[in-house]
Image (tube, rainbow, N blue to C red; front, side):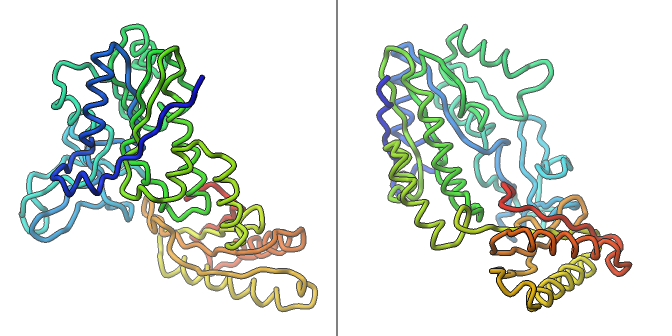
Length: 355
């Protein structure tokens, strides 16, 4: 089949024109046109829930998880705030707990996107597929069978709808927030974005009717977004290869993340710093003179605390040779045997997928 025609929608222009909805004017019209033609649409947004957070209009504070250093995500179905890291859940307050000011919903998840679309098209059935709707009774297979057999106009969801679906009547794919993964901090951010966009765009036009895709983004000129829209795998490979070479990221180098965690932050940080000093002292010895290894940190992880455990990370830019692996393993054993590190755990992840 011919590849779907892809259009990039500049959401900055939408904001300038007074549209602060997650749906651009172009996407709304195309969904309506697709529905009137008797075809189906798949909408992709890789964030579940209603809104990312509730933020106080007066003081700017947002309810945070008491166990984790992250804001609670608002779920309107049960009017609760939930932590997507540890599962902590509380009833959503009506006013700000700090100053009693009004709370404003910020950000958009699949639940809110479904509600907005239902308001735009009250008579249109919409199926939402994410971790909040798929369960032991309402299974993944049942929802997809319902979408296909009953010709439901729109399926909206997270990564569950991005890969492996083959519905001949789906002629439109809408990506609601294409640049969300671009700035995650992982060396694989561009690769993940390109992979996700090319996969989800490929869900359209798999039957006799031609397909089209609308990619909504705040950075329409970003090279990764442009290459994904063009389905240019070779172009992306050349671009990413050069970026990885400059940054000495895999496959041109290795990234070893040594994570330290425990419930006493000072003890965790002290243990991580002591491990770093031991490693650097060992690398100065003649036996390791040929090793190319730079230690960065320790620094707080992207989410510094999860379920009462503080997390610090030491990042090694290196070539993970056998002597270096053996040295790190030896230092980890010593670390765990040291009584001063009681209550602190440590593990190493080489070229991992952890963000």
